[in-house]
Length: 126
Image (cartoon, rainbow, N blue to C red; front, side, top):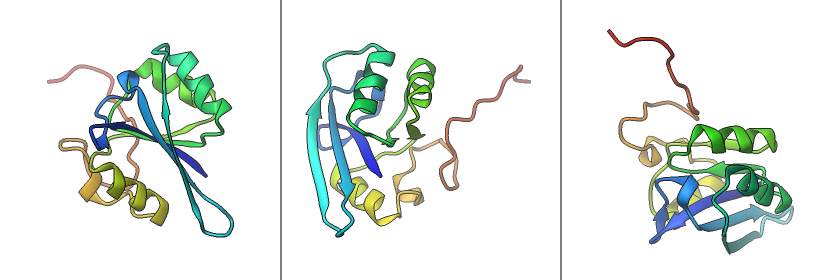
């Protein structure tokens, strides 16, 4: 598992589409944690998705993202866990320790539950 988390001012960036810094982390077979910070230079959704795929990213944990970027990441085989907020160090630790689904990291108004994903209702509001 190699995870990318967008970072802005020490916190999870609220919008993945415009984030230019990512924290990439993975746990080795020995249990060591490898962490790298990278800079993204292109805002095109498909170019971003291809860049992450080329880096070996398997999961993205983020605040929100556009449908275009969501589709591009999914087409690249990258799993998305949206609606996450918090201090980047705490989110990285929670991710690597399996406790990222905690409501402590859920963005306000984004529901409860484990890995709800990007579910949107279609139709009219009454």
